[in-house]
Amino acid sequence: MKCPNCQADFEYTWTIYFKNPLGRIKCPLCLRRFRLKSSAKYWSMLILSLIIFSGFPIIGMLALGVNDGVTWLTYIGLGILIVLPIDKLLDQRTRKTETMEMEDKEDRPSSAGDTETSVHEK
Ligand SMILES: [Zn+2]
Image (cartoon, rainbow, N blue to C red):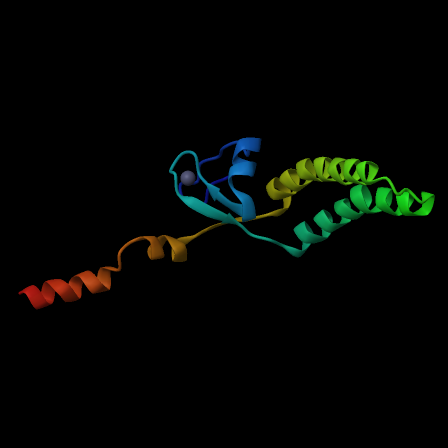
């Protein structure tokens, strides 16, 4: 994965994946955050894998008339476990990175306010 702030290439690990939900990633090199852009391709691939790995087993269980709660939870859990690596792969393959300059500015005290204060002091 390439950081749009410092242009460094780093590995998109499971630690980074779990520590940065909602596609907001903190670069391990420059420690600045950047965003993973969502795209139609990303969402369609993700929904497709959810349907394949969670939807079909659920439809199958409905067809077989499975009423066992534990079986249901096991299948849904397995579906999520399978979809997670796909989601991570999709993050790497289909999502572009973009800087979060707008939110960077919000973190800092506004420079306009500071100038105003210093003018009054003088
Ligand atoms: Zn960086």
